[in-house]
Length: 167
Image (cartoon, rainbow, N blue to C red; front, side):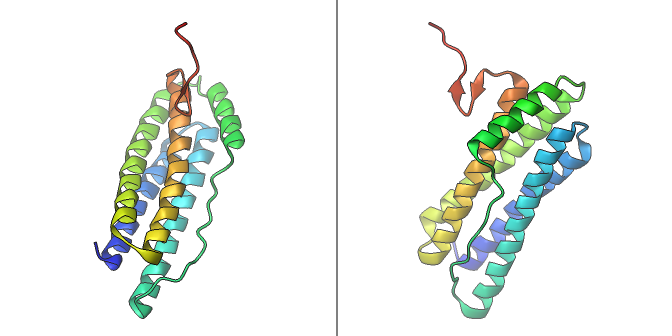
């Protein structure tokens, strides 16, 4: 895939993900969940802004210079604490709506991560490095969404580890 097309496609993916989170912000009744969705929507908007600036640079110069891509992803401990708070509040009647929104968010995050993985395997040099960073960040988003989904559904898993033993 050409670099310009890859950046444009990435903008489309990030826009879809941002819109899912923005919709979740507007439709959730739970304040803790709303803050999580809002943080993720803002982060995705930052990705869009970053990619648009990279597209302008690519069109002007035909090259991409390294530019740091920050993330608002908290530490694992902060994620765990946030999910504990969310668990205690999710006994409210709108729990099913949050599960649906998280499931949709998980789907678009997986699709976006798959796209970034493809770009890492197809591109070289600075474009590849840029997409590697996006892949790292999206992995964090996936972890947050999956942890909250596991917590809400009582699946017995926490960050892909079983919280129970059959022994």
